[in-house]
Image (cartoon, rainbow, N blue to C red):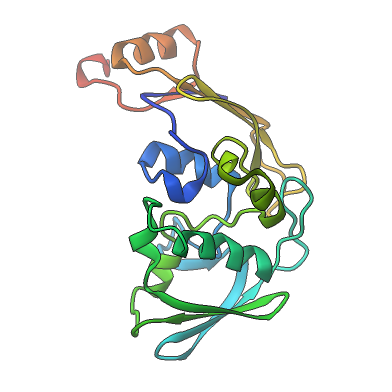
Length: 219
């Protein structure tokens, strides 16, 4: 499927770009611990299978076992802690202030983690499903450093094939996705800034999907 967007992400590293068009791409590459069910709007298990509010400021998560990142790294508690600690360690990250509600993170074992908040946090699960929540492969991240912005590795339903900043992003289905192989094998997202050009591309069949069609073109 080929999608036309007004613009592409400036970064494929979730905590460094929180624009909506970036989130659309990120959430094909990454999974969060929890996510909202689109039908019920309730929080549903993703990379965490269950959670418990132990006391007013402590939450314990049990992690999904048998999950691997797109590069073969195992998903575990170390990946969770590394993903969020790198945000908390870098005030320059655009999502930094969104995650400062976390006071401390603890690894209980390979598949259990605890989060301690600074104060009781009624919106805890909502924040844990917020921008930057996608878990990243720690060994890869440590190796490539800032290049995770163009070389992301997650556990999501798709994996990156090509990223040409300002031009296109090509994603391929992750055959080993824990949630089952996606129905769409390849997603190509093209940057087409002009609405009229996107409309023309849709009508000609050059792209299969777009958003932001001007009202005058709806007919």
